Length: 96
Image 1 (cartoon, rainbow, N blue to C red):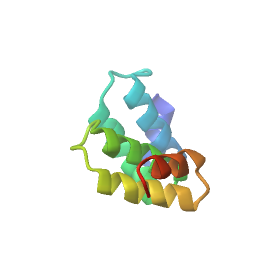
Image 2: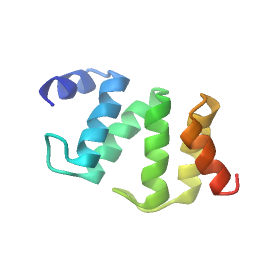
Image 3: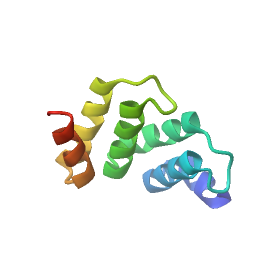
Protein backbone atom coordinates (compact mmCIF):
# COMPACT_ATOMS: atom_id res chain seq x y z
CA UNK A 1 0.00 0.00 0.00
CA UNK A 2 2.76 2.41 0.97
CA UNK A 3 4.54 2.10 -2.38
CA UNK A 4 1.38 2.26 -4.47
CA UNK A 5 0.41 5.40 -2.56
CA UNK A 6 3.79 7.04 -3.20
CA UNK A 7 3.73 6.12 -6.88
CA UNK A 8 0.11 7.24 -7.30
CA UNK A 9 0.83 10.57 -5.66
CA UNK A 10 3.66 11.07 -8.17
CA UNK A 11 1.18 10.65 -11.03
CA UNK A 12 1.66 7.01 -12.06
CA UNK A 13 -1.65 6.08 -13.72
CA UNK A 14 -1.28 2.34 -13.13
CA UNK A 15 -0.59 2.88 -9.44
CA UNK A 16 -3.54 5.27 -9.22
CA UNK A 17 -5.86 2.64 -10.68
CA UNK A 18 -4.44 -0.03 -8.37
CA UNK A 19 -4.91 2.26 -5.38
CA UNK A 20 -8.51 2.72 -6.48
CA UNK A 21 -8.95 -1.06 -6.54
CA UNK A 22 -7.43 -1.34 -3.08
CA UNK A 23 -9.87 1.22 -1.68
CA UNK A 24 -12.80 -0.30 -3.56
CA UNK A 25 -12.12 -3.75 -2.16
CA UNK A 26 -10.60 -2.87 1.21
CA UNK A 27 -7.21 -4.41 0.45
CA UNK A 28 -4.73 -3.06 3.02
CA UNK A 29 -7.00 -0.09 3.78
CA UNK A 30 -10.51 0.49 5.06
CA UNK A 31 -12.97 0.03 2.18
CA UNK A 32 -13.89 3.47 0.83
CA UNK A 33 -15.72 3.92 -2.48
CA UNK A 34 -15.30 7.71 -2.51
CA UNK A 35 -11.53 7.33 -2.21
CA UNK A 36 -11.61 4.65 -4.93
CA UNK A 37 -13.41 7.07 -7.27
CA UNK A 38 -10.83 9.76 -6.55
CA UNK A 39 -7.96 7.51 -7.64
CA UNK A 40 -9.82 5.99 -10.61
CA UNK A 41 -10.57 9.53 -11.80
CA UNK A 42 -6.90 10.57 -11.66
CA UNK A 43 -5.86 7.49 -13.60
CA UNK A 44 -8.75 7.65 -16.08
CA UNK A 45 -7.95 11.26 -16.93
CA UNK A 46 -4.48 10.11 -17.93
CA UNK A 47 -5.98 7.64 -20.39
CA UNK A 48 -5.79 4.40 -18.41
CA UNK A 49 -8.48 2.24 -20.03
CA UNK A 50 -8.95 -0.02 -17.01
CA UNK A 51 -9.46 3.00 -14.75
CA UNK A 52 -11.89 4.47 -17.29
CA UNK A 53 -13.89 1.25 -17.14
CA UNK A 54 -13.70 1.17 -13.33
CA UNK A 55 -14.86 4.78 -13.10
CA UNK A 56 -17.74 4.04 -15.46
CA UNK A 57 -18.70 1.11 -13.23
CA UNK A 58 -18.72 3.32 -10.15
CA UNK A 59 -20.96 5.91 -11.85
CA UNK A 60 -23.24 3.24 -13.29
CA UNK A 61 -23.84 1.75 -9.87
CA UNK A 62 -23.61 4.86 -7.70
CA UNK A 63 -20.64 3.63 -5.67
CA UNK A 64 -18.84 6.56 -4.06
CA UNK A 65 -20.64 9.02 -6.37
CA UNK A 66 -24.19 9.86 -7.30
CA UNK A 67 -25.40 7.34 -9.85
CA UNK A 68 -25.19 8.84 -13.33
CA UNK A 69 -25.62 6.64 -16.40
CA UNK A 70 -24.58 9.43 -18.79
CA UNK A 71 -21.20 9.86 -17.10
CA UNK A 72 -20.82 6.08 -16.89
CA UNK A 73 -21.39 5.84 -20.65
CA UNK A 74 -18.79 8.56 -21.31
CA UNK A 75 -16.12 6.63 -19.39
CA UNK A 76 -17.17 3.28 -20.85
CA UNK A 77 -16.84 4.77 -24.35
CA UNK A 78 -13.32 6.03 -23.65
CA UNK A 79 -12.31 2.62 -22.35
CA UNK A 80 -14.04 0.82 -25.24
CA UNK A 81 -12.21 2.99 -27.77
CA UNK A 82 -9.00 1.58 -26.33
CA UNK A 83 -10.27 -1.98 -26.69
CA UNK A 84 -11.56 -2.66 -23.17
CA UNK A 85 -13.97 -5.54 -23.72
CA UNK A 86 -15.80 -5.12 -20.40
CA UNK A 87 -16.59 -1.53 -21.35
CA UNK A 88 -17.84 -2.66 -24.77
CA UNK A 89 -20.06 -5.27 -23.11
CA UNK A 90 -21.51 -2.76 -20.67
CA UNK A 91 -22.23 -0.25 -23.41
CA UNK A 92 -24.09 -2.95 -25.29
CA UNK A 93 -26.07 -3.92 -22.16
CA UNK A 94 -27.00 -0.25 -21.69
CA UNK A 95 -28.15 0.03 -25.29
CA UNK A 96 -25.27 2.18 -26.61
